[in-house]
Image 1 (cartoon, rainbow over the protein chains, first blue to last red):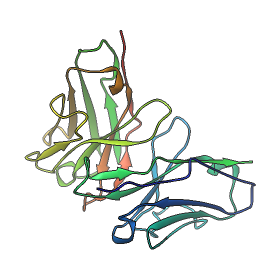
Image 2 (cartoon, rainbow over the protein chains, first blue to last red):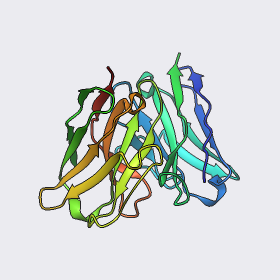
Image 3 (cartoon, rainbow over the protein chains, first blue to last red):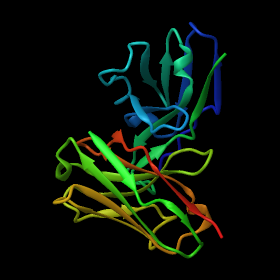
Image 4 (cartoon, one colour):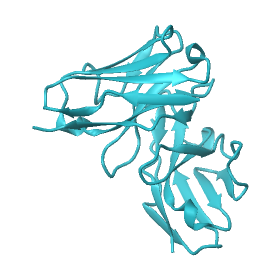
Length: 109
Length: 118
């Protein structure tokens, strides 16, 4: 079954680029989805199927995947991007079919 | 799409609660539905899921035999029956609509807090 590893925290200055990684033994063979969760709110999909962006999500958000690591990149970071970010894959062999990474707290300095 | 959870609250260990999720804005009977929980200050954990027709469901090992997901497609409502509750079940419980392939949660409710404490 899948285990997804994310850095607990990432800090970035406004206007700079934030990079959040999601590593796992099965990532290379699976599609990765990314959620943004602002304080006290429900998660929202920001990237799905590795690199697709839902309508309404700014182009500053992009996703990629190479080998056993998927990456969420936020360009020209804004104060409003401060949130927790979770990666997720679908894995039928896992305890629950949706496997989430532990989450990364993005702090905008 | 709108998902509105209700039924959370404070319950003693060993007690029971029933969560409900009223769905609107989409064809409820066409989608897998999930409950995902988030303990205070921690990450997201998938708990239970149910197929569109309500004929198949599964649960995480940590809740198997104690939590049961169900749905009423005529009422566009998802349920989570929670029995034999433990302190470690304390969390915000989110009702989540899956995409048509059931690979991700494309719409989430605001969540309902369940606190298990004596």
